[in-house]
Length: 407
Image (tube, rainbow, N blue to C red; front, top):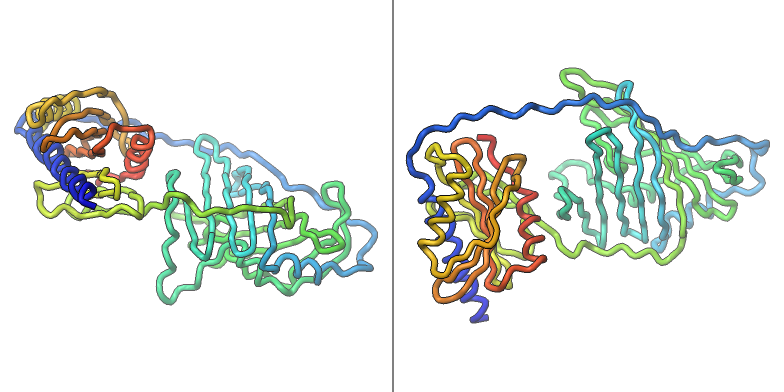
């Protein structure tokens, strides 16, 4: 504990020195730079198609065996487990985009990933529910899904929604994918929310229909979901629809769905205006004063900090050079091992790795310097041990989630 406390105090000192002294020294008055915004990219998606499998009716409108009861017994069982492949298409106006993904379920636990192949800008989503806790992936990081506001309908995932569908009718057998299967329909419009299939409808409830195809013993084989809603498009709205199929396999198999090893939360800097993600088991502290950084600490003595000050009219390269000069003046045996170009929140930046001695102990750092508007921001990751690939990956997680103020 004493070593941990000392590491934290030292990390705090290093953050303050490197961010406050280094950034502050770069903010001297100087000529105002000029800038021109880069071209904005725009693209018009080209239509594509990924039709779902066709269904061929057979000459058995009235099945000799009703598959509804065994099907529901399997689907609603607390031990139901299966893997599914997702295929289908999304239509928005006249454009069509293929949809693909995977779905795993075991009891109340489930995990789904889905990709909509918009040309040049594929949209991917991933979510899971494990042990009653819902998680959603953003920018490659797992977050606990926020609770619904008080008074709003409870959010539902696909697994929990399907368990409410108890009113089905077996309409007969059909040939689907070369197999003879029982076609099970819901008697009315299904109550499954659009959010359960990765879609949202800001203008209304939308319409969702479901069809199931099962073996005679009730084993699920295919689930088809068709949804329609109105999608905002500029100042108007366009009709949108999605038709997707879940083709099940390994029903009753040993499906394993584990909670994320690393879960992140969102930190919003009250003083400096940026936001970043950080691991939920780290301690986050807001800047107590204008000249002191925000600080986020791990239990191992590593830390992340952020600070901003005026550019004084200097360019990114001049500010970075000045920052390094100050680092060498304020620490002993300071050595810069890397200084290369990168980007942060879509803006050009510099990534610097360096090491130095403070308070008699050596610390290792990886920093990013970036200019946004009239401010220069510096983000520093410090470790009391030599940086590892895990440290760099952790710092990258911070950086990729940072959102800077527009000005």
